[in-house]
Image 1 (tube, rainbow, N blue to C red):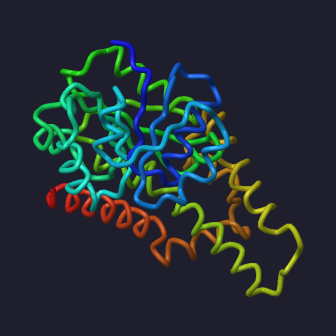
Image 2 (image 1 turned 180 degrees about the vertical axis):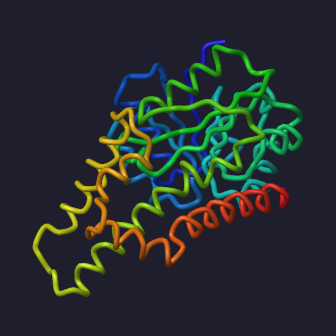
Length: 271
């Protein structure tokens, strides 16, 4: 069946980015039904399109839709799934879940084997540069899968993996923008500690990260090969890299990624 009516349960920043992507590229959605316990979340969206409708409850939103975006915090999934079951015809909807650590099996178990597509977007979706990881339950119709994939491609790129890998990839694509922000913050604070307070320094550091990433993306070289090209023997970069190694920079990143996976597993086990 053709999907044209989308209910959005939880209208936070990620949901808004998804909605703006839909509107921006003209995906064929005739109605977007919004529901959030915090009514103030609607204010930035409602002037944008006549396609929006505000629902009185979770059940009301689900009844009016053929597709449901679950965009609440993972800790709130049990409550939202309970409310969905109060909706007439909830079994006939397609569900899109973006909750970290929440498996399609947990949702299907709670909602009597409904169709679910699980997606892990990341925060650069807010500027149309996101990376979303998607997996598909084998029972989901291919047309539904492509519809959902198109939604997330409207705000960035999409990669497809098996669901068994979803928790492990959180630390790779979903949480990792925070690592980059922390790295940039550390460079700027390091500059300040040496007395550098130059106007535009943050912009320069951001441009450095963007340029470095694009250079690597467009190069035939591996990250290690490019590192060796920057770090000449006996030079400043070699000394800096030695200090990062002394402080176990790479090990710290690996441990951070393992912690992401562990927390995702915990969130799933709570459901």
